Image (cartoon, rainbow, N blue to C red):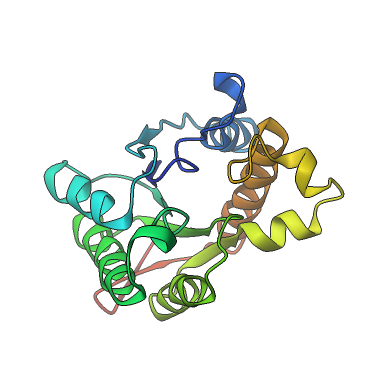
Length: 190
């Protein structure tokens, strides 16, 4: 599993290592499917999609079954919607190009306030037939209050990252159960 993103991709706000959402997803996968799962998390605090694109271009990204893309929270404050749109789409294209058989899940972070940026993530996800974990909806659907899921005004705490992990895992479980295939340049692969 590859994770590329910003501070939420990195689980900033967690109090212990095993509270990171990607670690929780890994454990859920290993417990259910009895397969070893490894994580390569190249997320960085305050990263924007352009940083992710740059990291994807300079790293040997291949052989991942799953890539999770977690950008937008920082971008909405420092880039224009046009800059974000083009760069976010390039992140997806490069991941598909470098890892054609891998599944990609996009993350709509719970911190997204700019409707234009929300719409870009939704549109790119739809255009590339990607599953999107909607962190805003996951937080709204949680029985916990938002205050109980946040470490600060933006970043989830351990409970908030558990909400992320469970929502992402539900997508993975649904896709495995449905034997979802990935389109590679118009060809379906398993």
